[in-house]
Length: 197
Image (tube, rainbow, N blue to C red):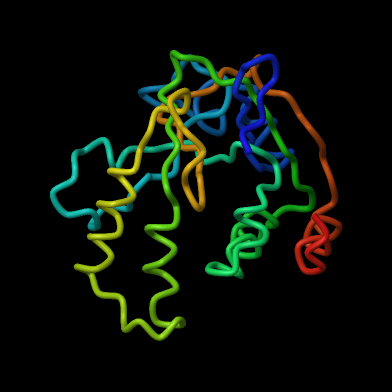
C-alpha cells in the first residue's frame, strides 16, 4: 500500500549514516559529478539496467537511478511466496555498515519517479531454482525489457504490481530527506532473519 500523507506520496530509501553524511555535500562522496556538481542530496547512481543487458533499449534504461519503496516494509516484499528470499537479499545488500538508516521523502511531480514491476527480473533470477530452466543472456534481456516497459509515473500508479519498486531518475534534494530511524545493523539483520517486520 502506498504511504500517503494528505494525498502526497512518500518514498523510502534504505542507506547508512556514512552515506547520509555524504548526501549533505555537493557531488558524489564530496567529489565533483558532472550532473550533480552543485547538488546535495540523494543522487541517482545505480544503473537501472547494467551495461551489456537490455539489448535495443534506450540509453535512459542504463542511466543511474535511486531505488526505493512506497512503504518501509512492504508485505509484497516481506511475505512473497514466489520470491521467498527477496527481502533477505535486499537487506543483505543494505546491511554492510555498522548502522542502517531509513530515509523518507515526499515525491513531487517534477521528480522523474516511476514504479516498476520488479517481479519481471526476479522471475528470471529465480528461474533455475524453481525448475524452469537456465537463465540465458536472451532470457535476461527479455526480462529487462519487460522491467523497463513496466515503468508507470508514480502519480499514475494503480497499485497493481506484485513487487512494486520505486525508481527515480532525478535527485532528491537534501532538505527533502527525513531520517525515519537509525538502527544497529545487527538489530536490523536479526529482524530480517526472524522475519519480525
